[in-house]
Image (tube, rainbow, N blue to C red):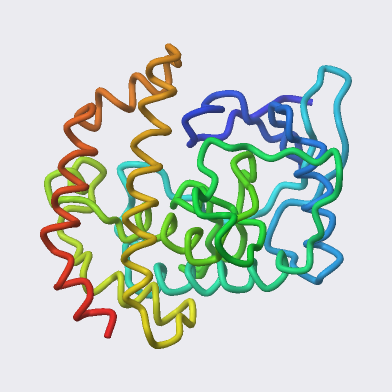
Length: 265
């Protein structure tokens, strides 16, 4: 049966294909752990993630295909609405509720590339760590599923929410957000939407502190992949302005700290 290459992604760009009602993807050293985790989500009644079908003879994993729309850059206008953003944050809250009861056992391994640096400081769940528009399935503008759990790892729920905000608000200068067609969005107002839709309780100043950590981790992750010579990440790095882009984001976020704090309430 013919394989249809699915668009999107950076690390696995061009290597994720659809075959009938299934998706074939490259595996990684943590695939066995991720499969156990996906099975746990399904047992908890969380059907907003792919179901594991098995492993292929060529080493790829086979997952169920989830019907819907997955926005890719330059992001279409429908994917930029406040309602779409709110539904994405609400889906993350459901995901955390389902993942909270997962018990890590001996022999399990997780990616450390985007993992929460404060994981030992507070109670944890299994975080997705990469909830960007390209990793969410929507139907009629409502988020219905999360994709690509390759970077999942134990962490604070607030850190996972910060990663979502960074990539989906997005938290970027208007210049940099505009590179992907999102320069007209109001990041201050949209961060409040994320917090409200997720159900973040009062006392939200700590969320900004975690956002600072998430912004730092993201830049370090991409720079490391570039230094390793990963062609896909080098292309993205150059397209988005290199190291200067991440420094712009950091300084911009610091300058607007009080505006974000006021918006969060």
